[in-house]
Image 1: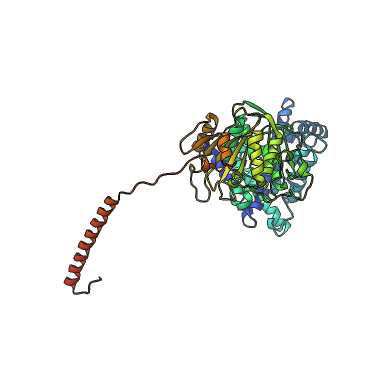
Image 2: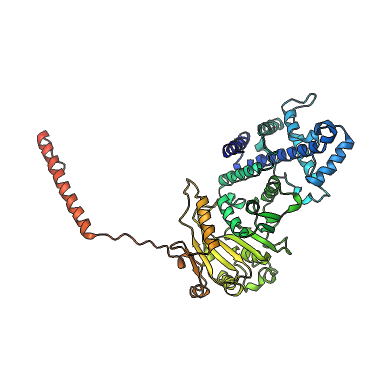
Length: 519
């Protein structure tokens, strides 16, 4: 599929939300549209899998609709391979035909059918290895909401309209060489994040920032055994690493239940097998669900300066993730709580990259204590990268990327000021591919570029009291052009002369016309 075809697919899928846009916000209708896309995807995967299995017997999935023996065997095979099972009469395409009166002897009311089928997807995974990956995936599709329609018939009409529009779109699942639908799903998530305002930053990291982090943590490797994101949102950061290198296992934790569902859908839509990812829901800081994990690559874009319960839980002060740093991150900003949590889970051969607000570079108090320990005692901070402002959904403040490695041989830290190189947008700025490549190349080659990057020694950082504010290390001051006073004076005299001549001309015209001079 070429770029134009992909854009057409993106546009068609975006248009499918038209039936929903009049009665609800983008943050509300995203649950329906993304849910229906996922249901269609699962249906097409199920049908393709079943048809392949039945090839030798010259049958199709539709042929075994009434055959209990075949259906039971197919259910077991599907659960093992796909993690779920859908009957022929539960497929997306079948319900679309039913909703449009194309199934003889069947009513066109499919609202209850859709509810039952979505529940069935979850139920068929119960008791299997995929149970945790499919549990509650569709709970955010509220078919009782009055925003979907005031009456049951109106709700049914909307559901049929959305599903019919989606059914007309070819997802190209047969193209094994391309991850088209996964990429388009990411596009839709980005569109919803853009429209969700402040809330958008909770579930999506801009693609170019994701690309930068994934390049950094995967540098020099062809395969990574485990990747982890403690605030994984929709899973976009994790999936970006899979675009760079082969990944064995994906791990993520997300506090928001809706976003947790979105992340699991995103994994499956990108053809990540249910055995190869583990996305869990809970508060990462107060309930670490991966306590034994040591990941080879860690990425995160935590909520900036999140307030957290550091002073209300006495166990946190003695938690292995935080205890060695002398102080807990302040309750007003959990930025360093996330950093030390990630460092605890970083494998000895691992690299981690985290997006933080600029204030984390220089704020005092407990954060200064933690920052000093990380630099001086632990020697794990490898680079500080300043990003442009207005890159992230929901905030216009500039951010920074901190890169960490364990067992570093050197003690210096690379500073990169990339804050002035970006593409300006109407509502939001973006990094171009060239911007990302320059940052990445500067990082990997660890080189100094005038007014762009600097390698600071430990002594230099200590002299600055472990303040990491980038302008202290990268001089971006631009000298103003010298003004030639003599030349300026000559220009002023010339202008005065021109003005005098103009006034004389105007005076002559006024005399000829017999009118009063304006000066």
